[in-house]
Image (cartoon, rainbow, N blue to C red; front, side, top):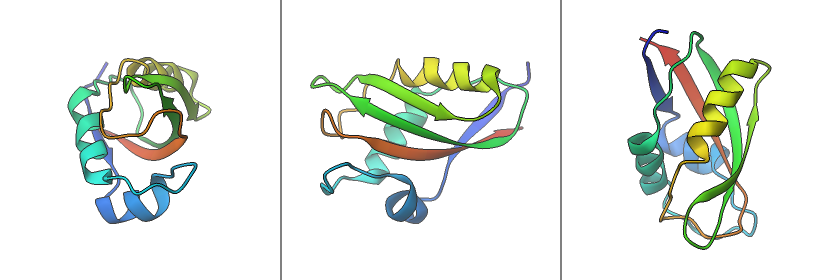
Length: 105
């Protein structure tokens, strides 16, 4: 498999369109973006824009990740990675949505 570079959309778009909290709490999307990028390790053979909807528990661990893509291999890889994430900058039991641009490099 080729190595991939994970690119999350720019902070401005990430805040306004791509990171949504279920109860409209103010969150620091730049910190969340950094946390995801620091912990995310993905290998795949495609370039694609993928939406991920996720929640965390009280400890900050992602406990649900729904990946919206038709590519089953990419879906499984992203779900596996998200379920390993620990995000200290999000509120527990809220629904978040992020768009990830997976690009081959």
